[in-house]
Amino acid sequence: MSWKLKSFNELSTPELYGILQARTQVFVVEQECPYMEVDGKDLRAYHLYKEENGEVVAYARLLPAGVSYKQPSIGRVLVKEEYRGKGFASELVKRGLSLIHDEWGERTVKIQAQEYLRGFYGSFGFRAVTETYLDDGIPHIDMILQDPSGL
Image 1 (cartoon, rainbow, N blue to C red):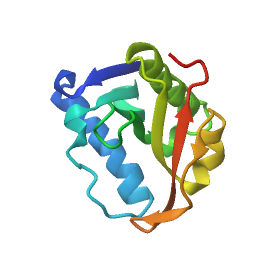
Image 2: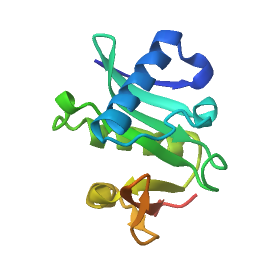
Image 3: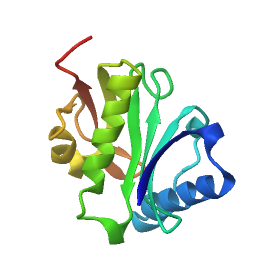
Image 4: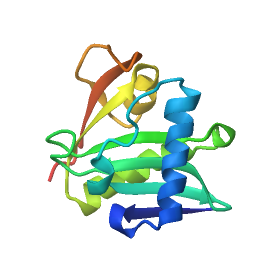
């Protein structure tokens, strides 16, 4: 299995299909949440994912500053159910943060997290900046990571 990082224009049609299939499987079908999964932000995003036998098994969408928030963001973080518990989610977030900090030179990252993952994201230094609210019927919270090393 290998990790890949590609801009939208670098993705092949099968890669894009695999990403959208994985996101729909987890966020729409598994979480029983019909919403507009293809939201137009993919065009400006970097797509970080792990494949096994041509299947996307872990994925995150990295958005530059100004796309969702004034800060860069990590979203659509997923690990397919049969691959959970192997540390892929932590590795995914670490790789995403490394890119944002080291390659983009950004210190602050904002995310919209499902409330039940508050502790997971907190383990990377994210802190809640909103109260819990419903988004598409699922409890969410906005969180900020301010890299202590500064720039």
